[in-house]
Length: 136
Image 1: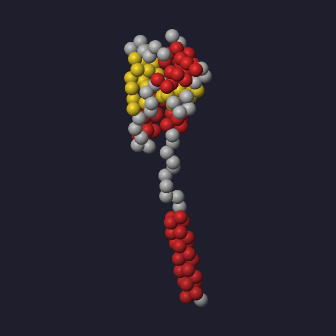
Image 2: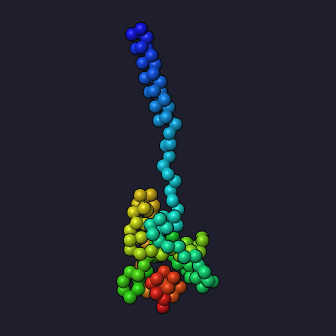
């Protein structure tokens, strides 16, 4: 009887180990898919502003592509903006959103250009009042 218990215990242990190993072999191996830049911007706290007028669409097309723009106003950073020319959407964020976005880029090992724009005469009248940065 003792020998039978030992055999049964052995087979149970082998079964548990086999199930555990099978689970490891079939478990997920890929990492989560990388987020798109607009998804990363939104999750970092940037707000999306779809172009609502022909002038805004025209302005978006003049912005540097795939570049985070540091919008200066009166010599200081006013906000951070990204023009998504594919969807005609301007993403605008504050300092905290900028740093969250930068960390997310680093985690996904993505690169994006940055350009400092000093007192863009079109940006503030077009987008500032919608964002809360004031117009004109």
